[in-house]
Image (cartoon, rainbow, N blue to C red; front, side, top):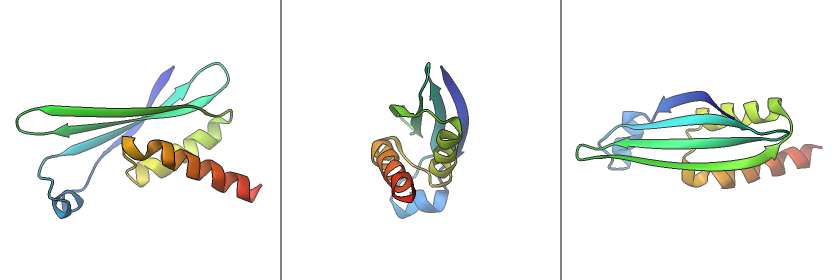
Length: 100
């Protein structure tokens, strides 16, 4: 099951610093199957000539809902893009293990 967690637009200043002059929206979803939670990130670029959509899913990240919600909060706050999702999930899991 996929549940919308939250969305955000990338700030105009950040876009212009990267020579991007169209809006970009990021959406974050909590993925839930029988025992595991995962994350999906969807990036939508609203270009004049067309709309581009890119997404990435990382399933079976954790069995703990609180842990996936914490990651979703961080990723949304940090505007994590689909192309970096796998790397960011790995970093989060590694940092959790080093505290255990």
